[in-house]
Length: 139
Image (tube, rainbow, N blue to C red; front, side):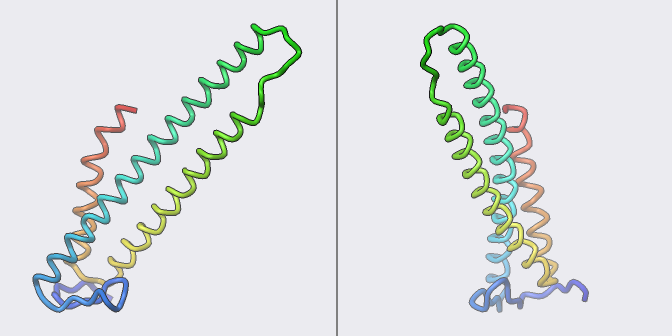
């Protein structure tokens, strides 16, 4: 197999059948935006994980302080931090599944061996990383 410069290609599904230069330009734009979305989800997942870990450590330290300061026999409910952790883990899992699906879509578009589509993926990945990278220092 080798890459070809062509304006005729079928991407992902039979209904995404490109036959013209305008259709190829639109398909490259869609794939580029898909790659930017992939990089954005990667950044969002890292930011969400960082926030979740910070919130867990803050709530755990606050719970330890209230346990030490209260001398009553009643104990605070233990299930609230576990429920919060479970919800956060569930949300992270959904985001991960979305990221994997988009990643496979991008991989399958590249496997069309169309050079224009490949360049759209590379450019979209570069633009997505360029836009998301400065935000990593904020978290």
